[in-house]
Image (cartoon, rainbow, N blue to C red; front, side):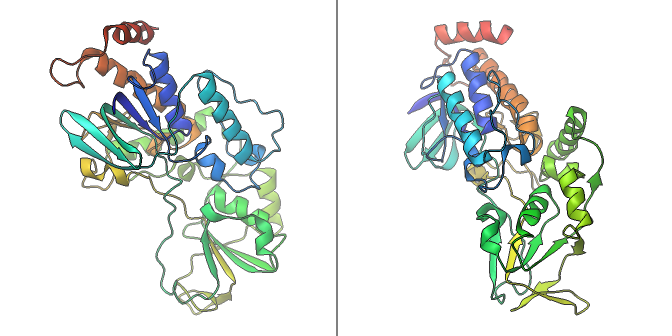
Length: 372
């Protein structure tokens, strides 16, 4: 199959990119194709734990051209956001193909071949929007195989009731760890919060200025070819009334990271131990970019160096939902920026094989839309 642009992923960043391509005059099918591994709309939101309400989530930004305005913000985010994404796909006729799992992207100079479990697509440009949800990270710790209790990552969090009368260790210094800990504490026999570093508590709201500053800090790393930190990871923890109550109640009483797991729990280097039935790893995610490995995009520093959204090592490839755009704070802007640059280069013929251009009708539409 042949298409001018392939977008991999239909979460916030992927849909923003697809909207930008549509607005620039490209048609689904010959102009662009969106591939999504999930069976239904919603991106990672459809997999979030059922106890996460819309009003508890980090700010959920509207996608371009359609306001996100839920009538009941107390409903689960894993229902409300997928409904919104599904409506968005219909409203802009994005025709997402799903479920399609991309296995690899390889170079077929001057084009790219996107191989999937549903066939292959040949394309001039790729916008990768695969996010991080499918790559939960659990650090290696001595004794992990000896521990006789249950270990799970936050990606598999089933809700607080399953931890009733259990001794639970929650590992991680981010908002996910804190939110889950506060949910579990009323059900558990006891809880223990451990982090590698002291938590960074911040007064005041997380406003647009703070968001831009956080994105800029992550972008610096990406421009240097370093592995990105998450935007949420550099913002610290906002001292909300709920968090203040958790601190006052002793639930959010941070302990330093243990040295190892034992059969019965966890232990520190000084010999201190804590008996546990469950270790919940709220230790974040890593970018899901393994399918891009054949393109050799990684720098010697371990990350994919970007100039804006474009991969420096291969200008045919753009990454959105990576590094500075790995949250709803930056996903919309990055998606549209990637779409704008890709269409511009298609219009100029700089992606295409010798003598190959967009159809005159699509090119004409692109010129008009890009000027607007």
